[in-house]
Length: 296
Image 1 (spheres, rainbow, N blue to C red):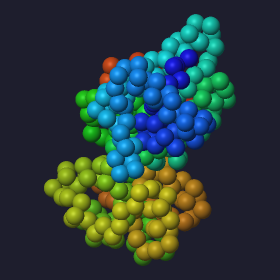
Image 2: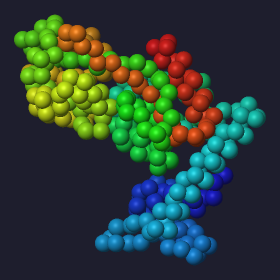
Image 3: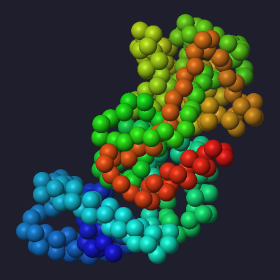
């Protein structure tokens, strides 16, 4: 129902490319240019400029983007509300999920949700917590599920699930069963990248003991838990990862958990939305996800 020109503008603005927008919307590049020109002529502004073969938003274009994203969001909300009146369940929900959740928890929930509501389209954008927060602010996702512990005033947070971070290594390691926190500091350890919720929790633990990340023997930081697991399995190193991420490796005997005496690293997985925003499709998904996770 949205004015198609709005969709064209949003595609160009998000991709900063007329060619990518053409491919994304499956229309010709001249048609893309025509739609953009029509908007510019209607409002008497220039929305984009080319600088060194790059497409950039002008000041007016950035302002237009703010309103276009809100219009697009409200149209989707309108569609869902009208379907609620007629007792149909259709619509589109874009979920932003931090890496651990997207890989190890969300797929099962999404599969069940789509079985119950086949006419609701789900899509997922994956990244670390910092990136998902950015997408929500830019109205590029409807809801996030993140693993961060720092709550920001722009967002509303609600508990999704509890998680535990554990120290893991290869069964070939000479260290078995349990070590002290001081002993852990000297182990060759692999961690997630800056901006990840996992690293944020570890930094908080260190701070509570008067330590910094530099006080650990960090040999590498990698951008995904999968990469960390493969690294640890192949070598003589250690990692701190979500217990939810290593269930299969524990069953296959590829990884083993080392207890850190008197230390438990717990964290929350949280739903996150823009503070003050309301969306009944988001509410429906939250209720379903909470119910499904309990069953899991």
